[in-house]
Image (cartoon, rainbow, N blue to C red; front, side, top):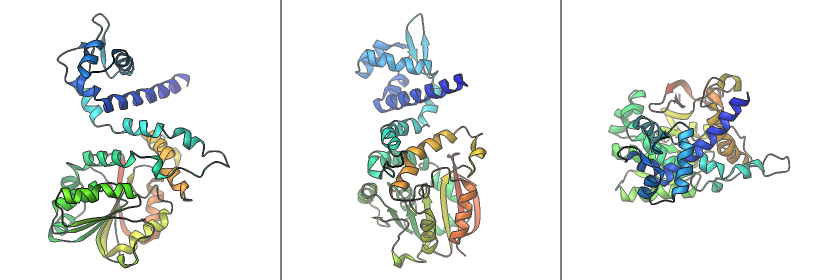
Length: 342
């Protein structure tokens, strides 16, 4: 047990060091090296202090990411490990969430704050936008849409689409660019998140998409039965009132229309998540972000791991039918709940 705890704590420090290396471009320098180099050579190449680089490399070596030659005192990053690091977004997120760990701890006492506001995470929307860009660049149109029978053809002909709780609106922008005959609306509660895609619309010359600040649990009254397809990607689990948010979503979908809710893959019962190696990550992010922002607004604090059983039940209670649970291409940690409005 002691060894297991020690490994877990060590992994946390390795994760933070990976985030530092990514942010400072050290992995790019390691990838560009022709053969192993000393810490002094790597520091000179990166224009950094050798002592800091050497200590960082020590974390990478003992974390079994970078190879070390004891005789030559040189370091080398194998290409297959670099490819794996490129697919990971969590280290950078962990470094952001570590900054608020103390503030979240202050919320634990009975007389402490309810939670933290979205403004406590100034870089969160940028991180999620970058992650969504990497995820959707090659899979959204060619792999995700084909799982929804007839949707791509409808988008090509022209339908009205809502991407709610859209953050920086990456999904909306990609779809709007691919399907000029359809009309897209992106909404999010955070004004700073919406500002970025609103500027991108002009840069990309898109005439078929608009963005506006809007609470998913309190959408405009005149939006009832007005969208052929509604999408909420990782946007329900941090809602203050997720039941109302789903009822509002149901209200906005046209009769016979479709709703895609993509959320974290997991089960409602804690014990059922024990075999999933990603569970500590999802529960940890939930503790440090999703749950606490919901509680800040006096909400339910649903959390990222509300699970497919509760999610399916809440979708049914909101009125949705024909609920299918589908895999999400290029994202094994998520589930796609495809529903219809009768």
